[in-house]
Length: 329
Image (cartoon, rainbow, N blue to C red):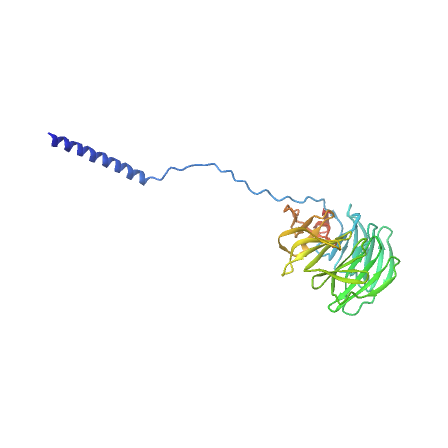
């Protein structure tokens, strides 16, 4: 009797184990249940588009060699590849004047807040009164063979003017004092590429072909620093791009003739020609389609337009064919 009971219990336990094994096998054959979740995908915010009102100016902006607004921001000039200067009203886009020398204009600069242009070309220095349409001969220039005009540096406070020619072997500088007396001199053997005359500190800043910044004051030439490119000058201060070994800008620094200060460090090296410093001292990197400030904010050019920085590196326009709009002033 006891054996019979043990047999029945064994059969029960065996059956139970078989059922459990079968259930586990069936469970293993099925996929685990799917845990569904709702995920909100947020696309990056679109870059802001610089909204500009384009005005016609009759200038082919794809071909201009340089352009610069007047300090008063009433007008601007554009230097054509042919050497012709076109002057237009920045507020309306209306053409004001077309100027040309027989040999073409090689360099131009605004004289302070007066709408007066300083022009050189064909070894002649002239001024042009934009509002009154009056040209005035100033002087004939006779630089040595092989030298080209590199810069016009003018102080609105003292009315001093430097017309700088240079070549691979040195420079020829024509200095005009307050009374327009002309003096021809050389600043060492520097092959000068850029220049700025301080407004009131009687200091001429020049950058040579070796990317060295020099100061010239009271007839003395001093090396200020190396590996820089001049971005712009304002008052008695020059804003320079600090360059790496490859010649690209990695930071922007300011020099007032006595001490240096770092304005910003760039997130990545860029060509110094793409940097602009506005009137408030803010730095911008300008490419054809984008403009980025030193806080990392980016604006895209409107469709069909491209950004064009000014010769003075303190203003930018968006240009579309022969139309333009002021973007950064």
